[in-house]
Length: 300
Image (cartoon, rainbow, N blue to C red; front, top):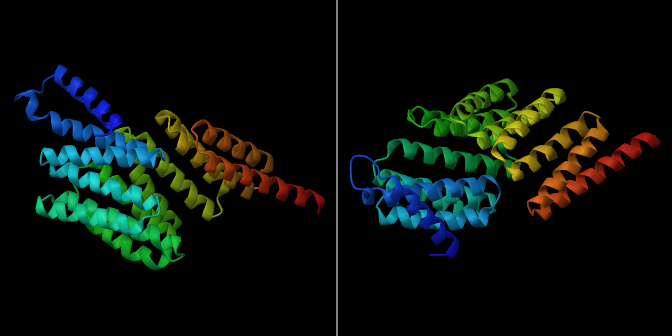
């Protein structure tokens, strides 16, 4: 076990031992609790763009879940691993992880988690299509797949919210702006109700993207300010940097060049504060491009 993972596990076990669960001896549940806690930490690291730490924590999550033969966390860890690999550019690894999760769900007769697996896989196919400039060609199929999965999931609000988020992304690719925003707001309501501020921030971020593509820049700006409020509550520096970057883009499109410049500078400063120099450099470049565009406009 790596030192970091061992330290986290020691802390978790120590905390759990101090308050034994009711209904049985504490050792009967400690490993499951530790696996669940590692999974939560891994997902938080992934949400904050720290993919190496997320993968390390997910490996320990998997080890703990296997040691307790705990299928629900095995499935969710594989889903999260697939998502991290996908966003690192490893599509084949992501598909293999998601397929592994689906097979485990079938073996364990976890019907709702099997439906969640299909949502992850549909989202991956949609994102891959978007990267290949074929989002509209895949969006209708993805929407249908996710709608079918949502017909099975009845218990977990986060899973349902993820499904509505993917439907919103699919509707966006189809140019159905109102339908996209309605779906995203269903996800947003569930995330907000559960206090999932990082996910709520992302929902507002995507709503802003829908509004921006539709040419509704003032409304997109308002949505990004809501995203900023959520991500401040979560203290998610990576998401805050992305929010400010997107705000700069929206402000630039709206012709608010000075405000856009300030937003890009804020994004760069936040990215540097969390040691994401490549993202900071992109914010610097966007600021330079916006300034050059502004200067060209003045000369004309």
